[in-house]
Every structure is written in C-alpha cells, then in structure tokens.
Amino acid sequence: MFPYLMSYKKYVSLGVLVLQTTSLVLTMRYSRTLQAEGPRYLASSAVVCAEVLKIVACMLLVFRDHSFSVRALNRVLKEEIFNKPLLTLKLAIPSGIYTLQNNLLYVALSNLDAATYQVTYQLKILTTALFSVSMLGKSLTIYQWLSLVILMTGIALVQVSSFVICVSGQLSLKPTVIEQAVCFFDC
Image (cartoon, rainbow, N blue to C red; front, top):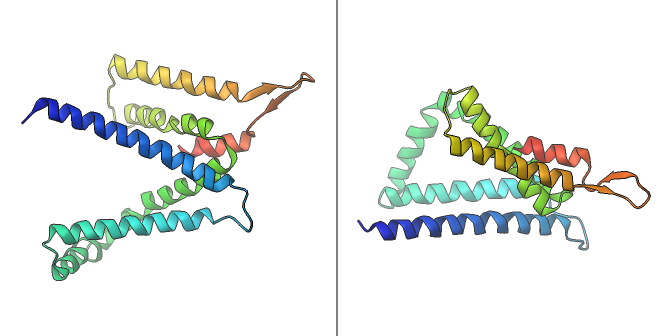
C-alpha cells in the first residue's frame, strides 16, 4: 500500500511497546515497594487477575470475530477446549511455568531496583537465542551474534555496578545474591 505508512506504524508500535514495558516495570516496582499502612497485595492475586483479564479479552475478540453470536462462541469454546482435552492439557505445562515466572517477576521487583531488574530480565533474549541455536538448529547472522555480545556486555556491566566498595574497604552487595538469582531464573 503506502511504504512510508507501514514504516511509520512499525516505529509507533516499537514506541508503544517500549512505553508499555517500562511503565509496567516501574508501576509494579512502585506498588511493591510502597510504604503504606496495612499489608501489601499478594503477588499471586495480581497474576491471577491479569490472567482473568486476558481470558476475558480473548473471549471478547472471539465473540466479535463470530458476529457477536453467543452460540458461535460456545461452539468455538467447545471445539477448541473441551473437545481437545489432550491438547488443552499439553498447554497446562507452559502456562504453569508462565504463572511461576510472573510470580517470580513480582518477587524480583520487590527486591531489586527497576534498572537492575530490567537489564537482567533481558537475559531471556540471550537464553532464547542460545536454546534456539543449540536445540532447534537455528543459525544466527553475524549482526545477531554481535547484538547478543553487546547485550551480554550491558548485563555484565550492570551486575558489576551492583557491587559497592564500602568506606571500610569491605565488599558489599546492593541486591543480595538470592535476589539476583530470582531475577536470573525469571528469564
């Protein structure tokens, strides 16, 4: 159609994605570290609420795709979920891991500063690339490998800057090793 319009949409989409990701992390960090009266909310409750909202949004989209017909929505749900129990059960494993990851995300954000968390969380890109090369036999271009090296260097620099030399000369950690490990395993 119009190439300049497609390029424009690509950059707007990238900007919205960056804004959404950073605002999510900063909002979650703020809400988990807020010193307010009373107990904090449970991270597991937030994860469940987010998943319920996603299910409702997906069902509304399916409802819209089938001309706002309740009968068609019920048919699709029956055909795709209830009539395929083995496939639905296979999806339970990744969804359980995803739920664990989201709970660990709240633990990490409660204990790490937002910048350290955000950069360390990008290790998921590195692990995905390495697994796709080693397990799936994918090949990466020289620019992709160079990007991974730059990403690793940035992560290493942020992790090294987490170490602080105290006035007394002792080495201390800002975030504990356990907190860093939670963020690492969250990848």
